[in-house]
Image (cartoon, rainbow, N blue to C red; front, side, top):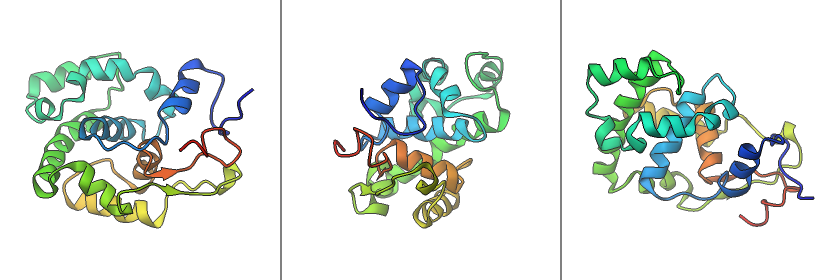
Length: 186
């Protein structure tokens, strides 16, 4: 029996996400954009809610193609508002469209979003040493800094809590608890 992080339920989707994706360093811009958008939709909700709708999000948002998303017109926005397969939050949908534009601007400035975002931790994951649920933070000084910088660049729904969850998801920090089998693998 594998020991996993405290937040993993017995849901096979959650187990697979934890075992195969969460905390694995991501350097690919397309995947980083997907996680950024999913984390913005997760704000105020449980991650499993987003995870269960992930495939619907992929279909609805053109496989998270930020070049297409930035060009969405009002008709596409209205279509997304009626899509029961995703989280139909007006502000988050609008933010996805404007975040696609901001994402591209960061790419232009830094060569890639990956270079920009990973530059905050010198290109390699920060390996934390958490033993209990209580030790794992919701935000850190670094997530505060990144959040502030993203907001300055026009990103929306990127508060420090959202950004720390993003950092955990894309492996900028290894927040698997030390007793989790994935901790030493990453």
